[in-house]
Amino acid sequence: MDGFWTALLVSTAVIFIAELGDKSQLMAMTFATRYRVRDVLLGITAATALVHLASVGIGFLIGDLFGQYQHWIAIAAGIAFLGFAIWTLRGDELSDDEAEKAKRSKGKAIVAVGVAFFLAELGDKTMLATITLATQENWVGTWIGSTVGMVAADALAIIVGAVLGKHLPEKVIKYGAAILFALFGILLIAEGLGWIG
Image (tube, rainbow, N blue to C red; front, side, top):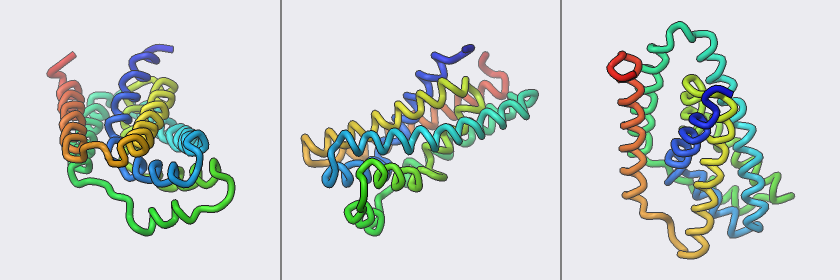
């Protein structure tokens, strides 16, 4: 399992950061006011594992098919991370319609939360970041790490929301996450250009 632990640690950290301030955290807090926290976390975990499995599959395929162009993939991944930095600065809010759907959801809690999160994560920055990471890192480590990172960030949001009754400091999170994305992007571009080994 070459690179498993590196992939696990990097993807956990990157996806945790990507998820901070994301609309999924707001959905998690909304669902936690309606359902047991355990059921919300199980639904989030199942949905995240499925979405991120597809994401690492796509990323692994891209990395495998175009492996001889690894320096170009690193540059493209770096540019993608710079884009994620801008996306993070732009912000991501839960619309009134999405909040209302979360409040009105019926049926088993795990299924309701899982379906909502699965649909919300399709095409989201955490899905795209997972694809990008899987082009560079071990796919199993990336899958597990990205799932752990997202569930940990959403669990943190639920706990902070329940204990403090408010969100994490939005500006600090937004700027901190954007800076970290930009740093990852710059490092990947420098690696692709051969400036660092």
